[in-house]
Length: 462
Image (cartoon, rainbow, N blue to C red; front, side, top):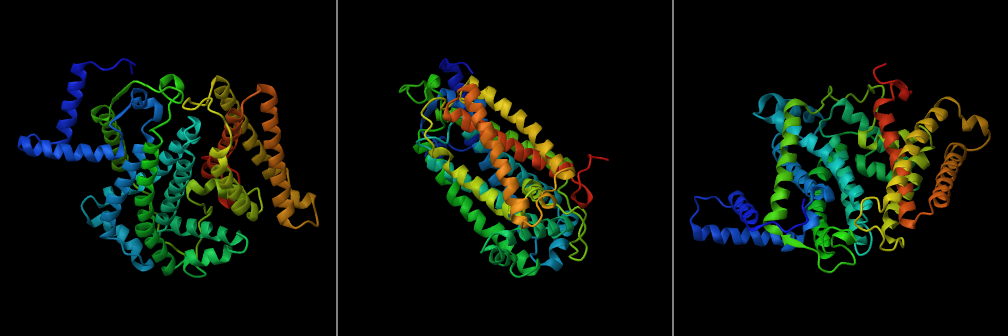
């Protein structure tokens, strides 16, 4: 987009377009003006009256925050419709899904929209978090909003997790069985958390009611509270972060345009495109549904939902105490602390900080794509620490020892980058983050496509 201010004709055209979208032409003029004023006031509660022109480029934010809101509204509306037919009891839940698909007009379509919107919500939330991190949007004065964003990401994951059980088919039942079984390895509170979530010792009617209640009541309330709070914090911080050259930190008078219509029309276009994509996917690809849950017959392999398969893959290489508790907790602590490191103002608003930062990012991603599969193959076929370290408890031989080895690799990589590139703290933090993130993505891919019967490594389609 040109940095020049749009001419008058273009401005008038966009204003007329915005008005045509928002106010029906058959409404009397006085009523239209009043309703337009009310709508514009509502919009300007979410946005400032004017925004820097650079912020309305698609490539600056990709509209990911707005996409998350659209997906939430799609999930809320389709979820409300599904509640009219769904029965949260093991004997009726599966049948209500079959009845929805076969006896209600557009029932299958509504379920497909809900399913694919939920999966897209995870992807969009993750990409939005990465966009904020890679453009420095988590740094001062936006640190607390980063924490709110992490909370929203957890809500997205937990919402998908609680909704996963509701169809009560084999895939859902055994995936939730695996995930809730992992809780038992959390020190002190593990068994208690497992019983609270399951509603008892086993997955059964109480579990389904718990998950249904969390999915349809508690989590939507948390979204309704935290999403506006998150948006308000963005506005309070002055909007999305921009580089200095485009009116960001250090520049007081960036070129600005009116929010209505320039920003709002683009947001409207992104929303329509996303909705169309979800609808098309829902027309041609049905939400999965296997046979009814059978507690006496476990599928082989039994896998967690795809967004938790990275953690299930960690279980193949670390003692459960480390895979389920130590590594996730340390990762969460580091994610919370990331915005509070002293980075300075260099690179704020710029993708990957600098040219050197971009080069280090590519190197880190490539290194992780080589290291992680290699480590998995070595652990699968060559390394047996319990055999090599006899007499040690498994928490040490299969837990602490490989964890210390992983820390040594990451620490060595950190000092290698620091010495080779003489990088800033922001650049080197970003590079290590990308290395760990790419490693987790690779573990997830291995869990989805390269684990077969007995969770053995297989070649896809082989």
